Image 1: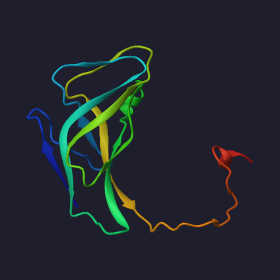
Image 2 (image 1 turned 90 degrees about the vertical axis):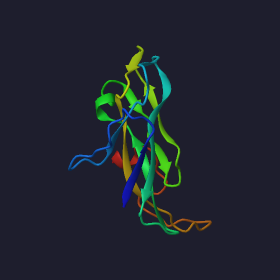
Image 3 (image 1 turned 90 degrees about the horizontal axis):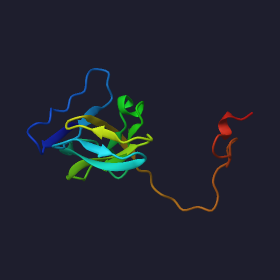
Amino acid sequence: MKLKVKYLRNDLPELVSKDGDSGYDIRAAIDESWIIPAKSIATIPAGICLELENYPQNDFCSAEIQIRPRSGLTKNGIIAQLGTVDASYRGEIKVNVMNFNDIDMEIKPLDRIAQIVICPIFKPEVIKCDELGETIRGAKGFGSSGKE
């Protein structure tokens, strides 16, 4: 499988992933700093378009590009919203970045704002039914697995 990258700006560093890393950092493709007001969201362009080439694809298997937060920003209250980029999308990658702080925060040009990770997608056959198989957990919801 190959990840083809179309750079929309000449100043963007190439995507790299070090040995042992699961993803590739993506950057803010902006000309000047953006201020994200407290408790708000900004959509920041990444300046790249992507294509997955030679990935396994059939009726039951595909791939996606996931946008994920970076821990370095998350610890400071700036969180890239998790997102899915479908393998068929060819437009510019953009990242919704949330400021959970009580103060405005700054994103500078070429700041690393998120990471992308390539993930397999399994697409099972969908079958309509009236009953589902039983399990010990059943329909117990949020937090139920930690209760005794």
